[in-house]
Length: 229
Image 1 (cartoon, rainbow, N blue to C red):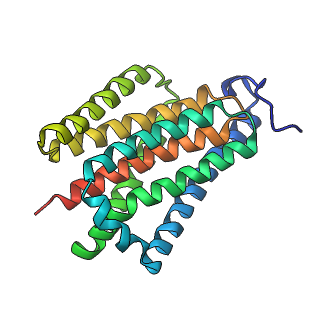
Image 2: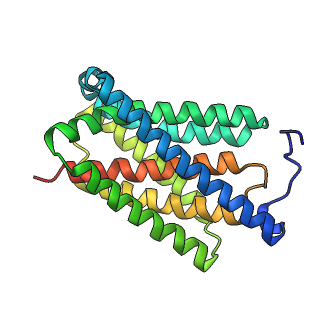
């Protein structure tokens, strides 16, 4: 079958078997992406890359923060518009590497200064994501109405980051809490789209969007944990 099969309708209109297959493909790709991300981070730490890039990136921390959000938006935007399955996989792979690079300095500082905090943040992220995904799947509610809210909150977050760079104010604990809530809403939205709106051939794009939201939640949970005295 050709990779270019965008004539397929939303998965909600497919048979039960096709819907089940699509959903399992999405979550299998998300798990694979998380494992690939972890493997890349291990390589960065063992090779010394994480230590070398930590200082220059931490000197521009807020720009890294903005790059993280922009990378998430950009990757999912591109994936939704690429028709070739191979190109979708390539975009996903590039996005995972970019995410690993952006995370490396914060993970390095966390590992050096607060041993154990990465495991704690990862555990809370997993529990939160499982709960949110289960909520969307059990209730079968369509959370597509969250799109407008997510767009506006995302814009406000970028404005806040740019403002903090320009005027030097600190984005503290409440910003991290707000962004964790934002990421949680994004996970609900992405899971709902997987169940209701994605075409059957777009499981790579769907997986990338959900992975980006999970990474966003992990980033701010880790940031919140690291801010504790």
